[in-house]
Image 1: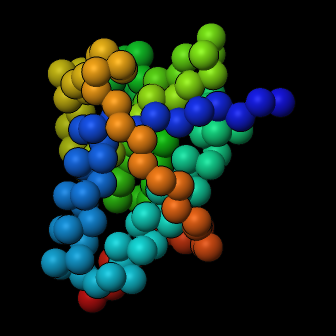
Image 2 (image 1 turned 30 degrees about the horizontal axis):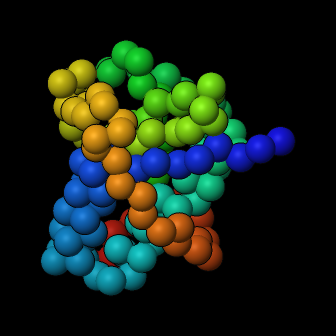
Length: 128
């Protein structure tokens, strides 16, 4: 079975950067590391089982994966090209809307990021 290719769109990369900055400013580097590890673990799952996560009830046409109890990602799968497009990483407490899923043209709005090695898959609780 061939793994799917993961493309993280620019807005999702920006979301990850903003979340990491928030976690670092308000908690600790350990919290940031656990968030990024959990995110990397979910990306690895998407490579092998891209349709394993539920379709979003809040944002039709997108699937949703949980990173931890505080954050989730929205993505679409192109089975023809065996590609997963990650659009946004959002706080689970937000009210999601279709227009928040910007960037419908994959070719103009994609940026690949390196694969981080995940050592653990913890439910992330912020450090205080």
